[in-house]
Structure formats: C-alpha cells, structure tokens
Image (cartoon, rainbow, N blue to C red):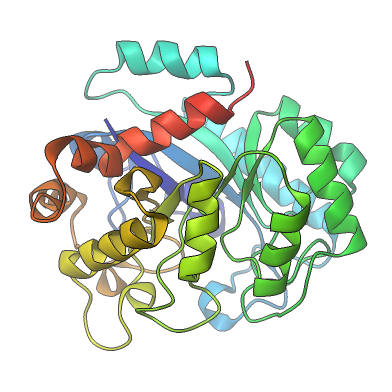
Length: 320
C-alpha cells in the first residue's frame, strides 16, 4: 500500500471545481481513480483554507477574512470528503483493520488540517477531533497560532494553548510550513507525536519552506516521519523536476534522520500547481519510484518509504 501524506483534495474540489470522483482534470494528476490505479491506499486529506492575503498562486474566490469564515470553509471540505464516500480513519483499531483487509482499489484517508485558523479558539478543538481531524499543522503562512512560510515568528500565546489542547485530544503535530522560531518553540513545548507531512531538504533547495537537517534529525529522534513534496520548486532550484530529484531529497532526509524509516511521501500533487510543476504528468508513473529508490535502499526500506513508515507512525500515534 502506497501512502501519500498530503493531498489538497477538498480544497481543489470546492475552490476550483476539480472533483475527486471524476477523472483528473486536464493538466492535473489526482483523482480517486488515478490514486487507486497507482496503488495508493491511504492519503492524508487536507483541510486547507486560503487566507484573503494569500499570494496569487494560491488565491481563489474561496478565501477567508476571519476565523469564522475559515471554520465554514474547512467544514465544507469535511462534508465534501464524507459525500465522496472516502473512509475517514480515526483510531489505531480502525487503521489496523483497514490495513489488514486492504486490497488494491480501496482508499481511505486521515484528516489533516493545514493552517489552524479554522479552529476559532483552542477550546473548540474537541469539535474538530469529533469530525475526525487527527493531524494539525498550525501554519501555512502566518496564522493566529504560528509564524509560517514567508512570515517569520514563533508560536503565539494562542498557539501554545492550541498545542496543549492538541496534546489532550491526542492530535498529531505537523511542522510543515511552520517558521523556524515556531518549530523551535514547538520542540520546546510539545511532547506528543510529531511529523512534517510535506517538507523537503533546505540543504538542497534553500528557503524557509524547506526543513533543516537539524529539524529532520529531531523529528526522527521523536519517532516521527518527514514526507517529501513533489512540487518542482521544493525539489530543485532551477529547471524541470524529475523523480531523481524526489530520490535525492529522500536520500538526504534519510541521512539527516539517521535512518530511512523516518522518511515517506507527502506529494502535495494538485496542491495549487498542475503537472507542469511536478516530476510526473501521470500518477501511474509513481510506480517507477521504487526501482529508483532501490539503488540506495533495500527492499524493506523502500516499502517503508512508499507507505510502511507512515503506517507504523500512525499505529504509534493515533488514539486507541
């Protein structure tokens, strides 16, 4: 089973009309049919909401001006996932049963909130947990909770309250998009399961959107996993990205982590970009990745990178 730890399925459907149950839209690669044909059995389906101040590349008519509007937008995406018949797994028991019975053609999801502004107050977190949100990344750009990509800064007082509420509700922390100071603040405060769903190596592609080797090492020390994004500008500084660029980031993360058991995929395919900015123009080409990884890792390690590492992490991290 291949696991993809970051897909903006709900946002694409509602903001841009790229429905999940149809064939992939022209120039894009993600749909239910393309995922199952490629052997993907589990995705981390995001609740992404675009702030009105978002840059042009992520700006749509579907934006929020305040936390309540963000809440409504994320709620619409939860409803979309349910209407699409996507199984939302929420416990270790459910995950174990699904993994045991999985066969090609089945697809389930873990809900991941990317940017925490839809949580109007930390006291509201229980309502989102009840909706099966199991992972939260406090930032995208700057939010009320955290500094983020292109917006330096630490956790706010509200952000510290959010992390405490997440720990009580056994919600996993996603460091992707968090600014460096917020990452440092989180490491000092957080004692729960931790990951980075879609973050590439800053040593290869400079910039605050990528993670440092030190961050990868600390995530690994805490038993977490880092997912490699397939967005071209996260994979290389110049030119067209290929699967070899994906392999390069996987290998680099594995060295930083001290083991490939802490690396997985978080493709972000369709995450505000089309196939022109991805290393593959058809999701079926994902099947070419294991052979390329085998040049650097043994068979068991490759199976882990393709999905097993995320499954093991979830087995340790989801509530009972």
